[in-house]
Length: 263
Length: 103
Image 1 (cartoon, rainbow over the protein chains, first blue to last red):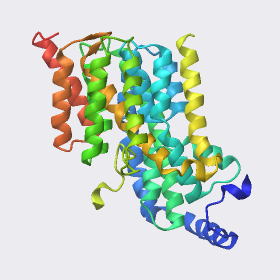
Image 2: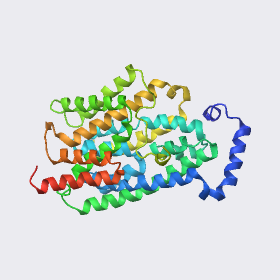
Image 3: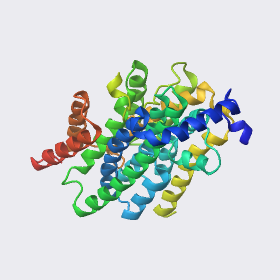
Image 4: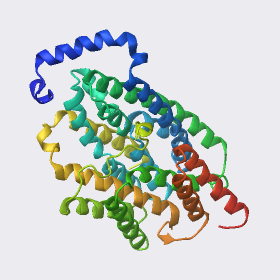
């Protein structure tokens, strides 16, 4: 397992070089472009933990269920999916199904990060937990191995800290405001999902997938229990991806693009 | 199963999914088709969740203030507003439309 996990084509000698460079580099983390980008993405993403916390309690979760989701599930899209299904009257099993399917892309990110930053021992478990859109995107945007590692860890751990702190604040805020509908929180949920979808609609094909899945959902709503239409759409999207040929990167864009300014 | 059970199972499976990327041999996940399916499912689910939260009430399709929130959010996104601003715009739109009497 140890030998197999190492990134392809990376010799022990190269690894030692990276290790030394990292040790030497720890003092000037401030000058690291990857660390700077990681930190700014951590703040931006963390802030929308505020909306997750508020929407989670509005959807019927308790304060502690909300806190546990952010700490242990820790993948924004899946967390929003979980509460989105519950908020629409869906069952726990449907919430589990859509959150799990939406988290599948994290396995792909994990594979990329294993090849890129090759964490060993307990770090592998820590790396897995912070493997999300933002940490992967920050690492992938760097070309130098030391910077890739810094970007991954600073973005991953940074988002984790900010996301959890703001989830707690959002959950407290959400419990305090009373009737969620009067405050438009159901409208906020709609906006949040569109906001998560939006950065993924950069080409013609993802737009087509989104439209077809939206239609499939609308057609399914009257005929199946709440929550199930979302799984129907997942099936349609999965079949589309399986049987058609196109870009393998579609849909794997981060919610907040770390390198927005450079494009 | 009580909701707590689903919360905990969902958390465990989410972590195991991430961990699988580090433990499963790269060639299994490097399959282009699997990467592609993970991506198309992400798009399909987010589109579906947007629609369900905008027009579904149980097993009924309804047209209420949430559709207004959807439109306002789309405008905010077209104007390149940051995520949090988009979410707040959606909330304000729904709240205002209710204030003027829409369901």
